[in-house]
Every structure is written in structure tokens, then in C-alpha cells.
Image (cartoon, rainbow, N blue to C red; front, top):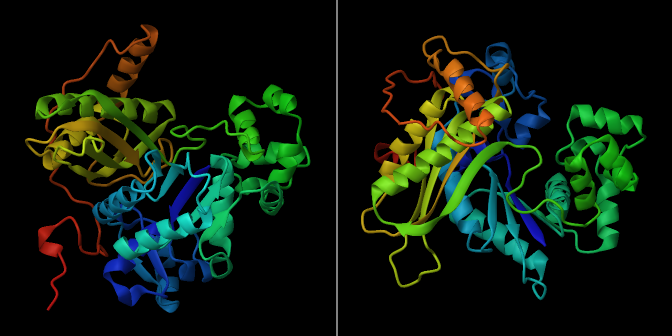
Length: 418
């Protein structure tokens, strides 16, 4: 069995944790440089504020509807995300951080557990320890977990934020309830092609002959169909459509010196940048993780992550690796034996469609340089060209007129209880 834990309206929920006056009120979160709406609370959704709305066009609407508008506070969101993921790691030894607000857990050996109660325990602990509301979907496969999570989210009062697909009857009901366009990994083009074949729901999709799906689509769609049929074909660590890109690995040995860890982090950051360029995307945010061997109870433990926000979207190995090395220096502790590290890039945008910045931008030489490196590495089938990292200094800050305090990442912004 798998579990998917998804934070509800994550950015807005993070703001509400430290500003209770926003509870039950419409809240909208803006993109970098206060450009457009990228997240909102349920109350704002009910007022029909559209996602992606340019705020300069919709500001009067927000004033009339009393919608609180806030700038993206990525350091806060990244830190709160790390707290949630650390809590979830206590519920299963196998965790896949799918995005800043979602994680898959593999529940092997939980046959004798009451999974509904276990999901309730996860949800309750995250809410109690962080203040972030979540929904939990539990099912035999990752694709069915996604559907279970949507069902839990669609009617919170009835579901209490938990949905478990643990029988054939429940699986069929869930698939018939789910529209084909709401299935994990089915985008607009694939949706259109499937609708032409008469697929209105996920149930219609799983009724198509598997051989026909494999012949007319690809192995990805075939795996998705099998997953929806209850046959697990999408293992932990493999994603269908990426909201973030992660490279996390355990070291072959434990490292207690910074130089070895910097080399690993640089390698992981380079791999993330390559993946970004392969899918023609750039990232707004970088998360660096570092952890000791939690299975060695007799040694000092340390697990921490930190977040870097770029002032413009980038896919440059130079930019990402340099930022990652600078970040890992801030969380490294001398004397700790580290076993695992990871680099995650998120806030992904397509390279041909993102908001430009008037005051700062990526070095124009990076694009042709990265293209040349990628071509050479592809030609010789290995990473023949590797990069040395430099400290690139950035003094300009993003426009964030509505930015909340960095309550958990800046000592000057910590709440003082009187």
C-alpha cells in the first residue's frame, strides 16, 4: 500500500499558521515580483479569483471582495515543508517527497494496521506539530493514491480528510467518480485523445485494452493504466508529471568533512539542472537536504534542510550548483557523520513562458554554454565535462511589497510572546 499526504492550500496555510486573523478568510499568494496569483485559499476560490490572474488587473476585485493579497514567502514555505516531511518520515522508512506540499509513503508490512486510523494519526500529528491541514489518500498504487486524496479533499466534512481504497468495490467507485482530465499524469493533449476514444472517466480508461494503450501511446500511459487497475507499476521515486525535480542519494560511506559533502551536493545540483534543461524548464527555488544515518542510534543525529529562492527562474548548472554549495555550508555541523544528501528544484516554469525581470536576469552566456556541455555529454554518453563552482554575488532583491515575516528562518522575525 501507498499513502499520499497533500497539504491543503499550502502557501495560504503557512501564512495562516503565523497570522490566525487569516483563518476562514480569502487569501491569495502572488508569484515572484508580485506578478500573478499562484495559490489561494478555498474562500478565495469560491469568489472565482482565477489562478494566474495578473494582480494589477484584479487588485480592485480583491479589495471589493476583501481578499488578502500576500507576496510569496518561499523561505517560510520551504522551511514549513521540511518540517512536514520530517514528521512524515516517522511514519514510514520509505518516503518520496513529490513536491513542496506532497509526499508519497510506502506502507510495506502494514497489513495488520487499521489504515484509516493510521492516516488519521498522520494528519493529526502534522496539524498539531505544524498547524498545516492535510488530506491523506491510501491505496495499493500511487495513481490510486492520487485519486483517493482528491476524494478526501473534495468533501472534507464527510471524509474528515482521509480516503482509503482497500477493496475492488472502492477502486471501481473511485475510478467512476474521477473525470479523465483529473487523473494524475493526463494532460490536456492526452485527455483530448482519450476523449476521442470515448473515455470520460478514469474507469473508461482502464477498460481500454492494455495492448492498444501500449501501441498507441507509450510505456508511461501503460504503467498509469496498470496502476489504476491496482497493479503497481509506478514505484516510489518515479513520477508521472513533475512539479519538482529531486536528486537524493545515500553516500557509499558516511562523511564528516565538508569538502566531500560539497562535492556530492555539487554533483546532485548538476544532475537537477540537466533534468531541468531536458524538460525545457527553469526553477524558482532550490531546497538542499542533509541527514545523518538514522539507523545508527548510537551516534549523534542531525537532519536539516534549507531553501534558496532565485530572483529569476534558471536552469543553469553554474547558478544552481553555486547556490546549493552555499546553502549546504549553512546547515553542515562539524562532528556529524552524514549519510544522505539531496537537492530539490521546485517552482518550475517552462523556459518559453515565464515572467521576465526588469532589473536582473541570468547571464546570457550561460544558455549556449549549458547547451554545448549537454551536447558533448550526450555525444560521449557520460559526464565528460564537469564544472567548478564560484560564489556569484547577487545584491538585488525581488519586489515583494506584501511579504510576510520569515517567522522560522530569520532570527529577527521570530514571534515574541509577551
